[in-house]
Image: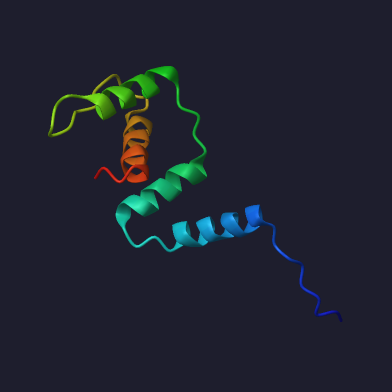
Amino acid sequence: MSTQRSALTSYQAKFFANELERSHANDHVGKLVGLLFDAQVEPKPHQIDAALFALNTPFQKGVILADEVGLGKTIEAGIVVSQYWATARY
């Protein structure tokens, strides 16, 4: 049996480091972002518009995402949370 190890590429090392970081996230936002990334959801144009409105709103205290049932408010909120987390604006 061979004990030879194969070297990781830079891409593979970064991928595994990211996976470890996401799997051991100790805050709720980090875990949520990981779940959203794993879901690999493709947002619809109206969901992106709603998320952009929420991110660019002049209101200081936030927004309420409200539309018809089934149009993807959870996805809209996930986009907003992911963006806030990625830019550390929370």
